[in-house]
Length: 333
Image (cartoon, rainbow, N blue to C red; front, side, top):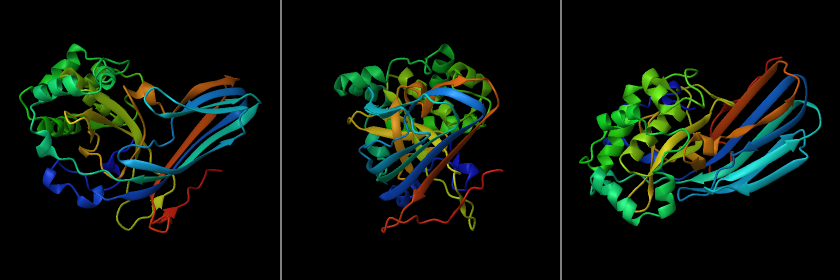
């Protein structure tokens, strides 16, 4: 979960005049995601499914991707799910005390700057009508209906009515929704989990990117705008003069709304701006349950275990070399 304000001082109000042109230039990234489990006593088997492979989209191209697994699994298969995401499944059937899954990808990213004025040709209500009439019927149905983690309860509908209005211009409504969630909620790890409902979030008024993305989705669906949950990564920068620590990035989540023109516009309520060329997409679906980066079942004695996750989103130069200084992570003895 990435809150840019914890990494640098570039986050402020959602000011369209301050959209940085360099954030919408093409970039190439090396993305590494390493998940390691260590167990005090041997585990007898593991069955895991992951969605960690970046996908080709209108804004990015996957140049290469590799998966490294230790120990070597007895089964390792891949398939494309209902939403076009690449899903990997593994089975480890021999006893082990350490399980490590590493994904490394090179991705070219090019997000154009959103045209809010063009989106303002419609009101929010008109946009919903146009999308329903002209959008892909599957997308309209899938991403407008309630889903397991995005239920439009009376509490969600009430909050949506506070921040959105049918007569708002569509582009302005997207900006206002993003800013409202950013302003009304506190970014705080540990107060929510993957089962937290939107009604609970509205009471807590605190959470992480997963929660804020799902609330934005709920608000948009309340007004008939198809919206999907996007999982991926966001490049972060260390404070000026400091090197970047290996493994210091994290998975991230944001929201994508279907427009009357047939395209999608991506919003990040955690950081109060549109998605740009710092964002790398791995998967999308109705909510977090459709795109969980890694989930599974482990068999064995219930003893102590540790989990270590390291994510790097590293900018590459024209020669394909890492363009930033990275300090290796020291594993505790």
